[in-house]
Image 1 (cartoon, rainbow, N blue to C red):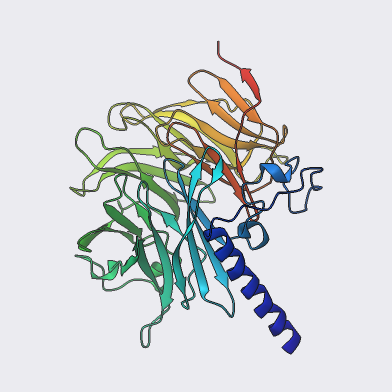
Image 2: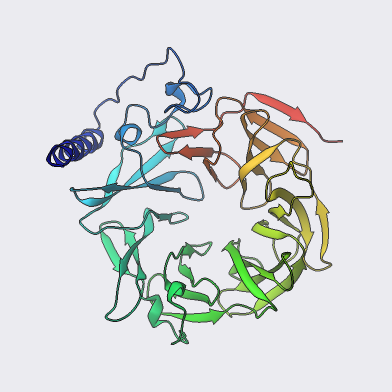
Length: 398
């Protein structure tokens, strides 16, 4: 055990030294581009080290345990757990057409933080989470907002109308998100509802979800662009009424008035909604349906145009074999996925049928980040960060 501890200490010292070197602006080490690693090794399938933006930086040798990129694809936040060291180290790194810019340290703390970070949509700020256990109570999440050299607690439990009686899990494993303009912080409390907190004043209120029949099984939510003067947010609730089948209730929320708008009921699950004009134009939605044959995955990706006024759903073709994850561009112009058959990053424009492919990279379950407008697209998996560069194109338009 003593030898293991000494080795861990050396690793932590090496990590801090690498970060200091990177912050000092020293030239990055030249990666070996002579060959790619085999599948299952550190480099991605078909991806040479030169394509990995982490190559030659501390992030390749000591990968972050959580990562997020802002809406415009211009800034990355990387969170690290460092045992026997500062415990938590969070870096803010600009993203440019040439790769990674000069990073800065957002957090260097002895506090142990969850493997979570949420980038502010436009500013050099993020959300992080620690835990605490009030006397005689369950463990709950504490949400922190970091901006510049400052940080502050997000007092969501002090929101107006906050329920006094909540199940123990309601305040644990939370995933707060920002509103479109970043001025509000929305804290979903699992099946109970959500807290809408002002990021500046720390004042807020609790709002219950629409009541649905049966048993709640999950939900998805996110910000949408303001439309007709309304600050919009979508909430997709999943529930079982009878038997194993799951149903889905999707609606928009006006974050300022608390009004629920355009409710839609579906017999398949919606994970994400995108639209440039969500009150007046159809939504591009992605989700999943139950498998209809034994060879399919438990849940099969589905893409559709949904008109919330008429509740008419027009299914869209992927023109490929998407594997999770699947990600929408926020305005609904593109859908990006990892194509299992072609072993590529795929970006589809449903309106035109234009499919762009990057065959350099494929990893099951990698995380996708799609910037506003559909470019850049980043794919992250542990020690590898790749920016999509499309070299193959197919046109499925009529």
